[in-house]
Length: 131
Image (cartoon, rainbow, N blue to C red):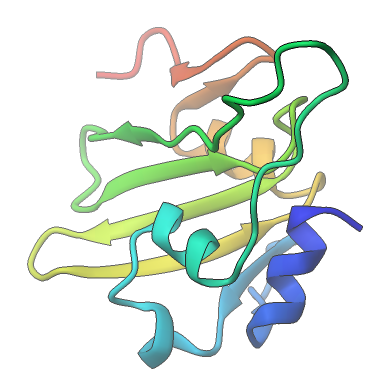
């Protein structure tokens, strides 16, 4: 349950070969023009507020990275407060096009670390030493 499963049910996804816990959207023609936050919005997927008194201003947070040696901008949207699952989207620089990947706990942090991005419970940032 939760936003990851909601998004999985909203579109057709296929497992990325040899990438456990990572899926790419098979409905590419329908979603490739949508940046990640708009993809979630159009799918009707809203953040679920955490328990507590100040829940009215909860929203998705998108992190954007231009990494050395990578032609595409990387956009990351965690779908849980612990930052263990989420969308990793590759924004094509040569056109307004997005390749969305849905990532479970076995794939999200592993893929981000592999491309030079560190995930903690507090932040998502470029790994030290990545230039």
